[in-house]
Length: 354
Image 1 (cartoon, rainbow, N blue to C red):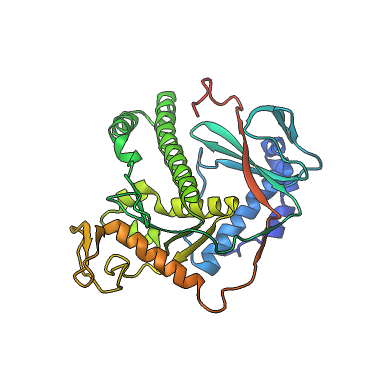
Image 2 (image 1 turned 135 degrees about the vertical axis):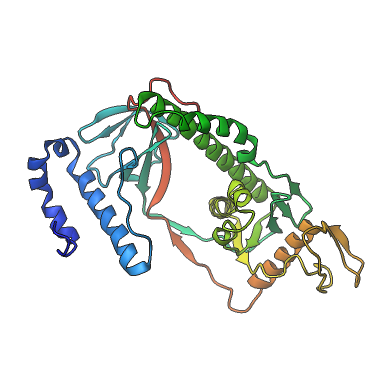
């Protein structure tokens, strides 16, 4: 393409695929719909750059394109403990759970993480799932770096700090990686070791988040959390600790678990939750070094984070008690995403541990 030529449209590039297969015969080894999805993904990134303000689409170098999307199937590709993919045939998988009756497989995305292949299977069913309505015992949840979370009931959970625990080992592996010649076999082996450790940290953190979300649902029927932009907080002085805790992921997981278990979830305004007394509503100014809440007006004393959780609970109750918060809203789950299988495509000789 010439430098002054206009950017080709998506339809034009899709129509050019048959000729591209003649020029580059290796493209014929890839299913046609997977190639079409790669072009559509490129144009979504380009539209985001032009219309939304995202960054310029990055060129995917060798080893950076880590997913394939199979958009449709005529029949169920999961056959026993295998999955049947176009031009790949039957592939043995570790099936986590069977596909429920009444659901139809819509698409399958193959993802490569740390030299381990996963299959995310999107299944669809015509079902009407109502949103949980406010009911039962309310719980306010305050998250922080000193304590991972504190509830309005007085429960305190220590922050596990997964990255900090494994940082010494990660530092050693990264130092060894920096001394290897790029693109060499030893470099690739060491890169996989670093990627697997990062993947282990990520899975450990996510497992902890799911367990804490289920514990919150066991303790109450309504869960309230702060409406904070954790992406902005992660850019501050304590950004590394914020990313290690993963508060944004924890809030999203808690919201999903509450919906799945029929618990009500909502977010409240986070302004001044640590500077207010949950008993009398008086303003109690204190900096971060003060870990105990003591109100001079009503002599109420408790842990600082527990007091914040109680403020969040009170604001959540006020939010659902406002006029107009009535009626039942329905959520139509016509496309539910389940990670049903883990693949082994022969890229790794030794299976990675779960």
